[in-house]
Image 1: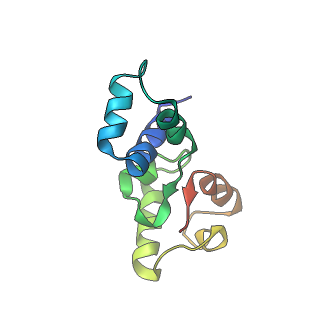
Image 2: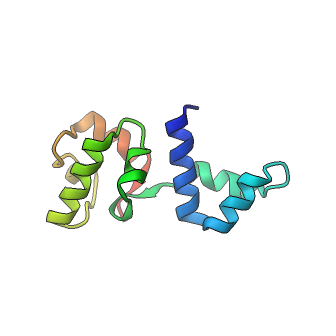
Length: 106
């Protein structure tokens, strides 16, 4: 697992279970609740609520693509599905497929 994947998992964990629970799990991994650890792996980032840093944590997304996603959402409203994600400048079908594995559109 590379550092970007670890960062993504951490961001997803904080968004899903709250800062205090995630902090406790990370500070005491031996005694952490297995459900909390599994939630960090299974959680998806809410694309339309993500900030620049959270988007950049998605494997394959750099600063420019993250900014393009944020600009698209600002100008066009929430992205509803993978097809609409492909309307973002610089995101084709393969990139949209990759991103969709890490995010939710709801």
